[in-house]
Each structure stands twice: as structure tokens, then as C-alpha cells.
Image (cartoon, rainbow, N blue to C red; front, side, top):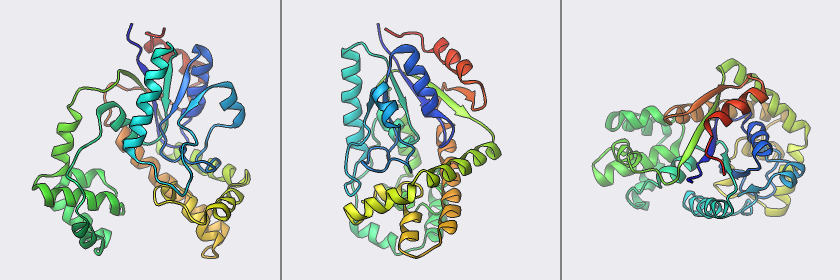
Amino acid sequence: MTHSILTILGPTASGKSELALALARRRGAELLNVDSMQVYRGMDIGTAKASPAERSEIRHHLLDVVEPNESYTVARFVQDADQVIADCRERSVPLIAAGGTPLYYKSLFQGIFEGPGADESLRQRLREQNPTDLYQQLSQVDPAAAGRIHPNDSKRLIRALEVYELTGKPISSLQTHWQSEPKRHQTVWVGLTTDRDKLNRRINQRVKQMVESGWVDEVQRLLERYGTLSPTAAEAAGYTQIIDHLHGKSSLEEAIEQIKIQTRQLARRQIKWFRRFEGVLWLDVDEPLDQKVNRVLSVWSDLP
């Protein structure tokens, strides 16, 4: 029997972990982290990592993989996740993948997009331009890609323009071919959704709870131990704002407000990404947990 992976999609603060844990308890499953920031040791509160009690109850894979002053690539994630999937299949253990990093999902289940190699001189020239100009350029040569990339996301804007200049083809057309490739793993897709106002309130409340739980002290300990975060770890929502606060660049209140704004922006990007996945069973965030669990189990039927 082929065992599908159950995959739980959803924006930050939508309750993915709660649903994943409830399902794992019901069916004896293990959990695969698909969050690019929960791989870093010590970044616990700000990434909403599973608690020690939850991790002792249910086996979690790919948490605390690297130190926060190290980088962790998409390619390494796919390699590590493939090993977890193979191990669970060998042991006939159901596996639930949950997290908020769309590119990790795309790469794990559809393969890594193999564009042209980096051209450092070209990238440097593009880095010297402001994001607004980059976005305008991309809008002219690749409107489809511009529609998917945030105007302030310099990293992705530069990569899209780099691909266009090196190949003469829009990155969106190359990615469309990539997306048509056969799936790498069989999966059942489930997603959590709600309206924007409700999600914003959940995000604001969670940021408040994280700060009350000692998030600032956590960041202070990371700085004392590592001095700085790697460029990839520093992309975690909220950490840069708290570091700025600790360096005296903003008050805590200002940092918290900026974290809420950044996290709401992150959620909108996640929703935009996840809506492009096909065959997803979408569940309302406010639906009772037991009801959600039963609905998921009705479609995730090929358990060992």
C-alpha cells in the first residue's frame, strides 16, 4: 500500500500545529517540520516551536537542525526531509508535514527549481538599485512574477531579474514548466483558512503572548552566545525588530508594532502562495478541532 504524507498548509497563527498534534495523537503519526525558521536551535518562542512536552509526546523531525549563526538551504531541507520520509515508510509510521514555508513545500513535493547559476557581478549591479525600481523593471519583463513577489522583497526581485537577464526568459515561464513535473512524493493536502480580520487578530494576540513568554530575553541570549544571526536565520519574523530594540534603535512598543505589521505581511504572502496549490481540502480556522480532525481523517484514508 502506498502511504501518502498528510500535509497541513496555512498562514502563520492559523493553528497548523494544534491540528497536526491532534491528528498525530489519533493515528500514531510523527511530524515533519516544514518551517524554515524552526530548524534553528534556540529560536523557540519567536518561531512558535513545539514545546518540550509536545516533542516528548510526539516525535518531531527537522527541529533544531543547525545553529542560528549558520545557514540552512532549501536543498538541504529537501535532502533531510527525503531521509525522514524514507525512514517513516520503512517503519510504516504515518507522517504529517506541517509548517509555513511555501518554498519548502514546493521543493519537497515538486523538486527544486533549477534556474541558471548566480552571476555575482549582475547581482551586485541589481543590489545597487532600490526595490521600487527593481519591481518596476520586473513588472515590465515578467508581470506574472511581479504579481507574486512583494515590492520590498529585494532578494526575490533580484533573482527574478537575474534569471531573465541570463536566459532571456521570464522566471515565471520556467517555473511553470517546473511545476508540471511529476510529484516527488504522494500527499494529501489540507489547509486552514479564515478571513483577514480574524487572522490579523490572531497574529496580534500571538505576538503579544510571545513577548510575554520571554521572546526578548530569548533574543538577548542568542546575541550573547552567537553575536549575530546568519542572513537566513535573521529572516525570521520579529527577530530583526527585537535585535534593533536591544541595540537601542527602537522602543519595545515600536518593535512589537513593527513585528505585528511584518507578520501580517508574511501571512498575506503565505496565503497567496498556498492558494496556488491544487486539490487542497480547506478548513475554517474556527471549526471545532475534533470536527477538523474527523474531516481530515476522512480524506487521509490510506494509513498503515
